[in-house]
Length: 204
Image (cartoon, rainbow, N blue to C red; front, side, top):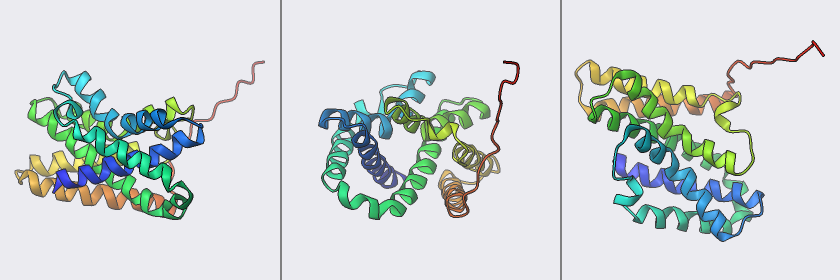
């Protein structure tokens, strides 16, 4: 089930990434690159940092085709994508929790500490979007006031906590996914925000 959700998530992330590329007037190669970076970048950075190989997209090159296809399809139907904004917000939330849980699982399999498990989950869930925004010259969503990275951390903590209590990986995955998804959707619905740090230099 997690694998199916992963395919859905990377496809949705690639499609939304295509719109970001379109706003910067990129050609079709640029659209594909932004899609790959967004959908697969978080896992790539995680693997590099944890020295975990092979890369997911190297082991499964079909992911490159799936994400590129999703991005190009989104470019073709860009005029109607605006009407599907709510759907893709939900799919993005799904992607966040799925990527986070996968990142946590990989760190656990490597028998790393709980801190690294949570960090691995957050990197997997959030880093692709950061790379997309940086390449598209936008302020990354992660660094703005939205409740996003915190959802990833909480999802990872729930997953690790349920597992620590002795329950199965499958149950931990389900509980963490539901908890993270509900939290992110509530944050979207009620526009929850993280506290902002505002500083203005008055010495000049």
